[in-house]
Structure formats: C-alpha cells, structure tokens
Amino acid sequence: MSYPYQIKTLEDYKKDYNKSISDPESFWTPIAETFTWRKKWDKVLDWNFKDPKISWFSGGKLNITENCIDRHLEKNSNTPAIIWESNDPEEHHRVLTYKELHFKVVQFANVLRNNGAKKGDRICIYMGMIPELAIATLACARIGAIHSVIFGGFSAQAIADRLDDAKAEFIITCDGAFRGTKDIPLKSVIDDALVGNHTVKKVIVCTRTRTPVSMIKGRDVWWEDEIKKVETHGNPDLPAEEMDAEDMLFILYTSGSTGKPKGVVHTTAGYMIWTNYTFVNVFQYQPGQVHFCTADIGWITGHSYIIYGPLSAGATALMFEGLPTSPDAGRFWDIVEKYKVNILYTAPTAIRSLMAYGNDYINGKDLSSLKVLGSVGEPINEEAWNWYNVNIGKEKCPIVDTWWQTETGGVMISNLANVTPAKPSFATLPLPGILPCLMDENGSEIEGNNVNGNLCIKMPWPGIIRTTYGDHERCKQTYFSAYENKYFTGDGCMRDSEGNYRITGRVDDVLNVSGHRIGTAEVENAINMHAGVIESAVVGYPHDIKGQAIYAYVIYDGSHGDSNLSKQDIIQTVSRIIGPIAKPDKIQFVPGLPKTRSGKIMRRILRKIAEGDVTNLGDTSTLIDPALIELILEGKL
Ligand code: PRX
Image (cartoon, rainbow, N blue to C red; front, top):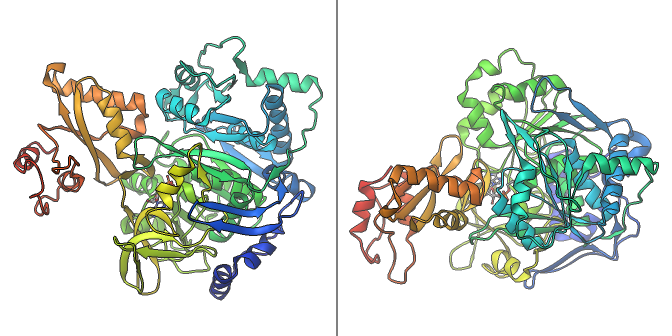
C-alpha cells in the first residue's frame, strides 16, 4: 500500500498544514478519495460548534471493515494484520494475515447476526487482549452495530452503569483474562453487572482461561459453539453493511469532572480517515513494518492505533496480552527482539516503571529493529524521555510525543518521526487540520509565544467527538460551552518561542493515573458508598511512576470500627465500584473539609497539602473554618 498523503519533509509539513487550515475541503478531498466508498460524499465538511453539529463527508456510504480488511485482500492478503503475543511467553504466538482476519471477522459477524444483532444495536465488549477482541470489534463494525469496549479492569458496577447508559443489547466477553500472574474472571464480573439489567439479550462467551463459569440458558452462549454453527452452514459470506459516513461507529466511556462517565461517540468516515492519516504521518509507517502499540483495546489508544489506524493502512499490528513486567521487566524488549518490532508506542508510566528496574533487563537484547518510539497518555518528563531515547532508541530513533484524547479520536499535536523536530517534554506542533489556541480565564485568546493558557481547538478535524451518547447537551456543555466557538480540551498548555506546545496537565477535576483518566468526583462517589464515610474529597499528587496518584481526604465516622481496617475497606469499596485502577494511594481521615461559605470544597488547598507544597497555601481567608487547615496538616500522610 502506498500513502500519497504521507508527509516527507518539514517543508511539506508546513505546506500541508497551511492548506489544511485555509482550505480544509480541498485538503481532505484527495485523502478521502484513497479510501473505499460505496457512494461518494456530497459535502466534505459542515459544522457549527454552537449546537455542536459536525459532519464530515456527509452523504458518503462505506463500511470501515472494507477499508480495514477487504481492500487489502487483492495485493496483501498474506501480510500479517495482527501478530498476537500471549501473556505466557511459553505459549505459541498467533498470526492473522489479512485473509485470515477477513475470514474470522466475517465468521463472527455471522455469529452476531445469528444471535439477532443488527445495525445500530449497541454491543458491549469486555474481553482480555486476545485476537478475538479485535475480531469482535471489527465484526460489530461489519454489521453496523455500535461497539462499546470496556477495559477489562473495570468492576461490575462500572460495567452496569455503562450498559445502562448505552442500553446495550449484547455482550461479548471471555471466561477470563490472563494478566501477569492473575486470572481475571471476566464472565463472573459480567454476571454481577447484569443483575437488574433489562436491556441485554445475549452474552457471547469466548474461552480463554478455562475458568469455570455459569451459563444462563437462553441468554449465554459460547463463542466456539456459535462458530461451529456457522461452519456447518459452510461459512457464508457476509457483505459489509452499508453505513453512512456519519453513522455511529463506537461509544467509548471516559471520565470527566462529574461523577458519571460519558459515552464519547465517534462516527465512521471521519474517524477512519483521521486514525489512518495520523498513523501514517506521526509514525511514518512504511509497508512491512511491525507496529507495537502496548495499550489495551479498552482505551482509545488501542482502538485507534492497534485496530483502525494500522489496519486501514494495511499495516502489521502487534497485540500483547500481558504486562510489561511479567514474567520480568524485560518483556517488552523480548517482544521487540522476537518480532523485530519497528515502531514501539507506549506510555510514560510504563517507561518510568521499566526505567526503575535498571538496565539489566535491556542488556543483551537486540533492539536494532526499532525505528520510531512513541509516547502517549500523559506528559513525559525529561528523565524518562532521555532514558527512552538512550537505552531503547540508542539515540537513533525519533520519539514522537503524541498529545490527544478519547474525544479527539487520534493524535492532535505531535512531532512527525524524522520529519519535524522533537523537543523533550513538548508535544511540539499541531498536525495538519488542527488549529490550536490558548485561552485565558476571561475567555480571551492569548496570542504570541512563551505563553500559558487553556488549550482549545478552533475548527473541527475529521476525528472530533460528535456527541456524548444519549445526552447531546452534555457534550455541548463539556466541550463547546466554556469558550465560544471552540472545542475545549480540559488541558493546560504552554507555547514556546518557536510555537511548540507543551501540555502541562488537566485544568479540571480529572486525574491522570498511570495514563488512565479518572474523575475525582467518580472516586469520591465510590468512597462515599462506604457506610462509615460521611464525606470525602479526592485530589491528585505527583508520583514517580504513575505520574499522578490519588489522595483521599475522608471524614470518617469512628463508630464504624478500627480506622486502619476501614481504610482497607474503603479501598476495596472503590475497587468494587469502579475498578482497581481508581484505588486511592493515600487516605487521610480528617475532622472536616475546607469549604468556602458557599459550601464549595477548596480543592486547591487540599491539592497543595497532598503535594507537600505547604509553605504557600494561598488565600485561606474565605474558608469557614481556617483552623481546620492546621489539623489537616498535622495528619498529613
Ligand atoms: O491530559 C491529557 C493527557 O491525557 C488526556 C486524555 O486522556 P484519554 O482520553 O484517556 O486519552 C489518552 C490517550 C490518548 C489529555 O487530556 N495526555 C494524553 N497524551 C498526552 C497527554 N498529556 C501530555 N502529553 C501527552 N502526549
């Protein structure tokens, strides 16, 4: 496959960038024309950020799986589409060529159809990182069903909330998932999530761990049995459903500043073109290369850079079931050596954790196949950047620091490997199509360089969020109301003298723990479920490995038992309500929470205390009870 829109030089980048901003319609037209359409679009772009109403390529008809699979069959049917490495290094790996992937996706699409799934149905996928997860996702897209993948670390309650919000009719899961030395009993978590659910009609269960599960007659079926039924009918072909460019492709839940996660909606054509364009340009993918994105498909990074970006580009995506530190901290490097990985895309938290294990796990490993390194999910500190550059890239591989979000569908600000310069801890320059700006607290744009502000985007790009599922008003309020006519990212940012952007972190009540987005209100709600908790406030504090960790201030009713045991109970409660990723790292019992006269918790002060920055707590005169601060400081952990 060739990519006529792959940018090769800094001059081309500047030319393409300028054109994409001054005339987006003629910029995107030839790019869109390289894809497979059933019917060409009527209009490239229609938008207003007021409602918001954004449509790309409206009137166009297509199916994303024809672009991700079928169109590669003529010339590249034997190219590996997915290489899968097990959690267990002793277990044989699997390779699915484009031809085999096509066969399996069509086969499972038949299973979905046979079980009554159709265009527009919401299908929740809760699986470990096995090829069947990618197959299930693509099979949904093939029949026009809307997939909603839920990360395997979320708890039954978190799943129940998402099933409810999406009004999901089907679930695809596994008996269990392997993660390091653990087996996660996925099906039993689903059983718990389904207590009281009235929308789910069928649960399809794929075998992975052979963990015993209970199957409910009429509701639960085995993946393998259903495949056999399709086989006995001679594996009928299943032509892809014709979708409108703006038909929903998927919902992916993400945390915000309220207690309830929101279902970010991406649609078909724009998302496809954006993930493909960014994949080809940021990583400078060359046909035949092996791309290893270490994210889980339960997050947007896995959606965009394991499935849709690479596959639409006919690339080879490596999918890894396990953990970077299991059986030891050399696991990534063994994988790079084994498959001659060319592009490695991972998160700063993983880099920092592997860095802490020392270089013994790297020495002797052949990493010479690596050409490009990537970072995503949180700011990468200079120490981690340098370590990655020297020890993994051997100072020969560009590091692309890619800033983007679940809502943006694909990379927004990043250097392009070997094309535009890197600058440690800076995401650097916007991709073509992206017009960033920095805004001040009063809603005015901050012009010039060497300035700080809230990062907004002034015009739509093909991969922009279209709505939040079932609640368009929420989408409007969250992203399009803070600043008129702009998409608000929720991130703070600085622009240097050369126009490079550096993301400084969230400016809302959202934490970034090990690259996972967690809303403080969500954690507070979970903590407050504990019978002994009267009130709580959650803030983030810097953590060497995780980037940010969770500090919870809790007003606790002592009559509920020993306080140390209660802290463990509270942690378990959070794990049960959200999942282990949201467990507080520190819990401090406090006699009260610092509030203003209007009853608002002064998080700024709590944040400073948690960060250990207590010399200048700022103005505390508006607090109802300023003396409380001393008591909180005394008990600081
Ligand atoms: O704060 C930014 C941070 O992660 C947030 C988005 O999180 P999520 O939707 O879970 O998507 C993560 C993967 C794309 C952003 O608002 N973030 C993401 N990438 C970077 C980053 N912060 C700094 N530098 C990055 N490269």
